[in-house]
Structures are given as C-alpha cells and as structure tokens.
Image 1 (cartoon, helix red, strand yellow):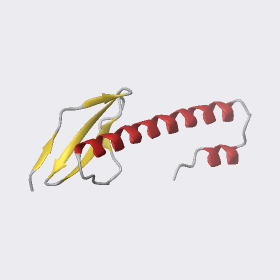
Image 2 (cartoon, one colour; image 1 turned 45 degrees about the horizontal axis):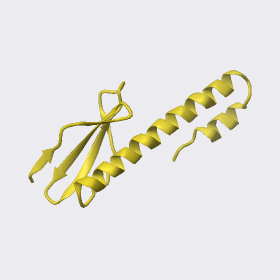
Image 3 (cartoon, rainbow, N blue to C red; image 1 turned 45 degrees about the vertical axis):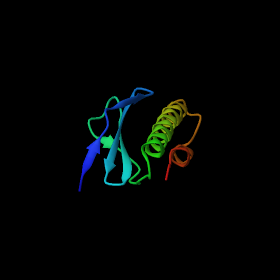
Length: 92
C-alpha cells in the first residue's frame, strides 16, 4: 500500500496532517499540548473532504474542552452538583 502525507496545516493552534492511502484520505490532528494525534477513524474520497473533516474535528475538540473547563468552574463554585457536572461533560 502506498501511503503519503501532506505537510502539517495549522488550525486554531492544532496541527493537521492529511494522509493519503491509495485512493482514500484520512487525517491526523495534533493538539498543542499532546504528543499523539487524534482522528475520527474515517476515510474520505478526497483531500478537501479530509481537510474539512479535520477542521470540524478540531473545532469540536476545542468546544468540548471549553465546556469542560466551564463545568469545572461551576462545580468548584458550587453552582452545579456532581451529577449535573457529569451530565454536562458526558460527550459520547
């Protein structure tokens, strides 16, 4: 199998790498503070689709981190119960 990768592209401080494997594409997203990449385990028909999916993936991860930080602040301040905290931060 022939696998090629593109240079990393910055998006909101994350690095995105598009990986081409024969006739499909996937992505690897690197958070600024983590050594390993994350992805959605999907394949895409072209580079543009993989890039768009990677940007959406990064946007979602940033939003989740912001919500978790806010929920942590609320829990610390006693504004939500522990059950409410877990309901707010359960992203499946």
